[in-house]
Length: 157
Image (cartoon, rainbow, N blue to C red):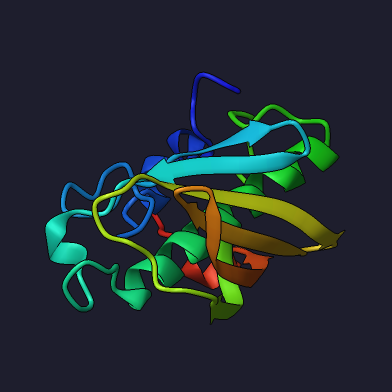
C-alpha cells in the first residue's frame, strides 16, 4: 500500500468533506489506499455512531461507501492517465449516484474494512463497487457513480 492516502492528495480547497476531508476536524477523515487492483480503507466507528445499541448507524455506512468510492474514482483516473496523484490539474470526483444495500447488521465497536473495485471508467465518469466487512463478514455492499468535479463547483481563489 502507498504511504499517503488518496484523500491526502486532494488540494486544500476541496479537502473539507465530512467523510474524507483531511481539513475537516469534526469529520470522519477516511483514508483510502490501493491494495493491488482493489482499494482499501479502515474505520472504527465510535460509540456515538450507533443506530440501536450494539450496531452502526446506516447513514455512517453509506458515507463510508460514498467517500471510499469517490476516492477510488480519483485514484483510478490518475492511474488510467498514468499520472501521479500530486500532478496538476487535480482530479477530484463527486457522487452522481449512490446505491447501498445493508446485508446484515454491522456491529459497533469493531474495526471495519471498506474495499472498492472499479467497474467502469469512461470519460468523466467512474463506477465503483464497494463493500464493508466487519469481523470477516460483508455487512454492506454499494455502488458509487462518481463524476469529475464540475467547474462551477470548484472554489475560486
